[in-house]
Length: 481
Image (cartoon, rainbow, N blue to C red):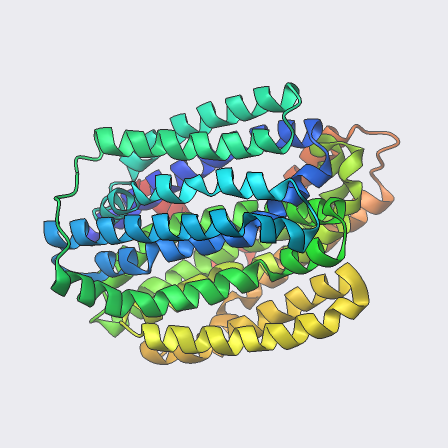
C-alpha cells in the first residue's frame, strides 16, 4: 500500500472519528438547548447566519486552500497567510460592529445589534487558528485535530446549557460559540507545534492571493446564497418560522455535512497530490462518489420516514411544525456532497476562475427562483431549494467531469442502483410504519429503533444481493484501518 493511500485511510478513520464524536456531543447539547429555548431564539441566530458565514469566508480569503495545494509551502507561506487572515478578520469585525444597528433594523429585532457585535468576535478568534488547522490538514494529522476539537465542544456546550437553564436565552448560544472557538484556538497554539514568524512576504502574498481571491469571491457568493432562504424567511416571516426552518436545516445537514467535511479534509490534500495524474484522480474520485452515495442516500431516506417520531422524541412536540420542512430538505441532502467534491477537482487543477464562473451561473438561477417562489410561501422556497440543488449538480459536473473524463451522466448512472435501493427500502419502511406500527401502541424511541434496524437490515441485504461495490469497499476500508 502506498504512503498516500495509507495516509488517506488513516485520515478517513480519524476524521470520521472526530466529526462524529464532536457531532454526537453537539447533537446532545443541541437537543437539550432546543428543549429549553424557544424556536424564536434559534431564529435570531439564523438571522445572523449569513453575516457570520461571510466573515468566515473573508477571513480565510481562499489562501488556506492555496497553502494545501502548494507543494512546498514554507514558514514564509504560512506566516504570510496567518497575518493577512488576521488583518482581514479585524477589518470585517469592525464593519460588522458598525453595521449592528442596521442589521437589527433590517430584521426589526433590536436585540440583534448587541448580539451580532459579540457573536462576531469569533472571526478574530478563529483567525488565530486557521493556519494551524490548515497545516495539520495538509500533513493529514487528523488525530491531533480530533483531540483538540472534543474538549472545546464539551466545555462550550456545557456552559451553553447552564446559561440556557439560567434564562440567558440567545446569549447562551452566543457564549457557547465564542467559548468553543477560544478553547479550540488556545489548544492549537499549545499543541499544534507551529507558531508564525513576524513577517509578511510580498511575493508569497501575491502568489496565494492570486489563487485565493477567486475562491473568496466564489465563497462569498456561495455563502450569501446558501443563507438566502434564512434572509428571506427572517425578513418576511416571523423569528419563530425561521427557528423552525433553521432547526430543520441543521438536523437535515447534520449527517450530510459531517460526512462531507470528514471526507473533504482527507480528499482535498489527496486530490492535490494526484492533480497531475488524471487517471488516478478519476479513480479516487469515483470511489469517493460511490462511498458517499452508499452512506448518504439511506441516511436521508430513513430520516424522511422517521421525521415525526424523531422530532417528538428529541425536541418535543413544540418543534412539530418543522417536520415537513425537514422532510423536503432531506431530498437536497442526497446531492449536497457531490457539489463540494466536483468543485474540489477545479481547485486542485488550479481553475479557481472557472470555480467563480460556476458560482455566478448557479446564483443567477437561484436569484430568479427565489424571487418567484417567495410568492408561494415557505413551501415554495423549500421546493425550489430542491430544484436548485439538481441544477447545481448538473452545472458542477459539466465542467469538473471534463478534467477527469468523468461526466455527470456517468456519475448518475453509477450511483443510481444505490439510490434506488435506498429509496425502495425507505418506501417499504414508510408503509410498515403507516399501516403496522403506530405511536398509539409504541413509544417514539421504540419506533425509531425498530424501523432503523429493519431499514438497515433490508438495505445491506439488498446491497449484497445486487453486488453494490461500495459495500465491499467500505468493508475493506474498515478492515484495513
